[in-house]
Image (cartoon, rainbow, N blue to C red; front, top):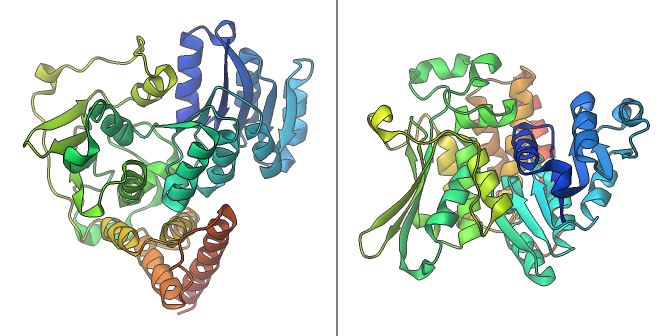
Length: 393
């Protein structure tokens, strides 16, 4: 029986993973090692009971009593905190879903690789902040990383059987988010509620706001560079409002292979779960006649400054990815809390990168995970100082 773990089980990716596991036999087909979640304790406990997990972990220590109560009599061990999540990730599993949002998913992903299984990677921050280290860790333990972002799964599938040397460009698509058609002068007044509504995808709040700012696509550009080893100049982004074409790979013979599908993350999750086979998935089938047309346009650099920052990060290398992500997370926290405006997020990130780069703290390639985590902490401290200064001015 195949063993599985799901980190970030109560988020949108985790829910879709649970749906697929249950649809493919649930506890009769899979031995569930670990599930982790946040404050949705009732749902985490329900999933753990249903799948018969060995351990369920909440990220929050104060939620542990509630989790223990909810799991009482089930035989599922309850635990809490970052150390407990890391310990759960170190438990051997054949297949691990890494769907914790943000830099918090970095350590569990590394721990999961240590037992040589398959890491289904939905946590894009792992590659953005520590790509070379993560890939090296996978090679060291004979583990496999399969991409779960819809764009990178699409590229991975388009490259099956192809020589990467024949690739001229990789194009990842973006819906454009909630504000793709807003007047530019209105963006500064955008509210958290407005930014939290996605036109095509059903996702968590943080990634939905990142879609509106295009910071998610900026991270995905860096992720493309790290995962596929392609020159940044050959990575392109197109705004595709229909969200039916997830990525395209152009080859030196002039041909382009595109991956299409309805906007449902169960495509990419199911592909990673069943790889190298393709199994039936309970997703909508693409009807191009009904869709009528597919449209594309170049992203507006003024509307989406995050894309320019991503190119600068890729060019600089070193620890810039770790600082970029940490500053982005800090700015996003501040926007959600109402402390800064929507357009200020990119300004904060750019200022953090400028200050840390000027100090020389980002130039060295990460030698180990501690260096990445130190850069992360430094960027958060600078971001806090930048935002405090802005509020005081």
